[in-house]
Structures are given as C-alpha cells and as structure tokens.
Image 1 (cartoon, rainbow, N blue to C red):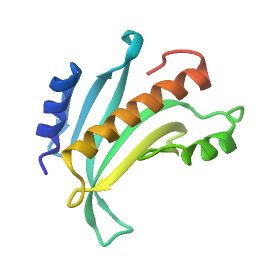
Image 2: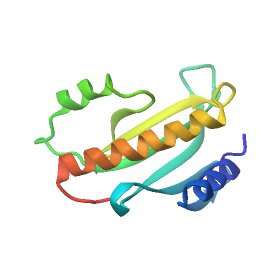
Image 3: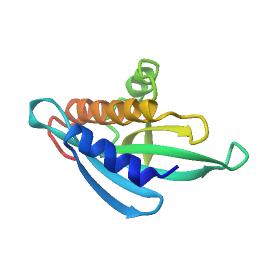
Length: 133
C-alpha cells in the first residue's frame, strides 16, 4: 500500500493539508466544522501480536494526561466508537485506529481518518476546554 499517496489524495479531496515524513509516515490536517482542524498521523507498521502482518495506524493527539481525567469515562466511550479507541502514549491521551493493510479498503481508511479527527477534536475540547492540537 502506498500510504503517502493515499493520504495525499484524501487530503486534496477534503481540502486538508498533507505532509510526508518518510515512506511509511504522513500527516493530514483534517478540516472540521466551525473552521476547526485536527492533525491525524498515518503510519505503516508491523503488527507484533499478529504474525508481523503489515498494519496501518492512524493517531491524533488529544491532550496531556493528568490525574483529573476520568479514564473510566474514556474506556466506556470506546464502546461507542466504530474504528477508534482512546489510548495513553508518552503521557498523552490519543485517539487511534488501525487495520491490516491486506484487508482494509480505501473507503474504510477515509472513515477511520474522519472518525479519529472528529473524536480527537470533540474530546480535546471536553477534556481541556480549548483547541490545543
């Protein structure tokens, strides 16, 4: 899968901004309602738990973790999401979604990117009261 080509094409389709880091990592700045934007990182990686199958992962940073954040609420909210889930990585709460390259379609990738961007934007505001990222 040519992740960067797909991400660039989708960014153009939605009026977003595309940036390439390397052959397996790129970013889209996704335009949202009310002239808001959310950054979504796309990355190809080997799924260590699944016989090293190639996976595609989309991530958006929400906010820095602190002890006032209701983790139970976030875990419960995971049940309401289709592709995405809340995770803590490097002391930040992120929203991420992934799929195996061999089974995902371009349409599903677009759905994933939009869900990650929309949920990140919604929870960034719920948890911080601001547009941080």
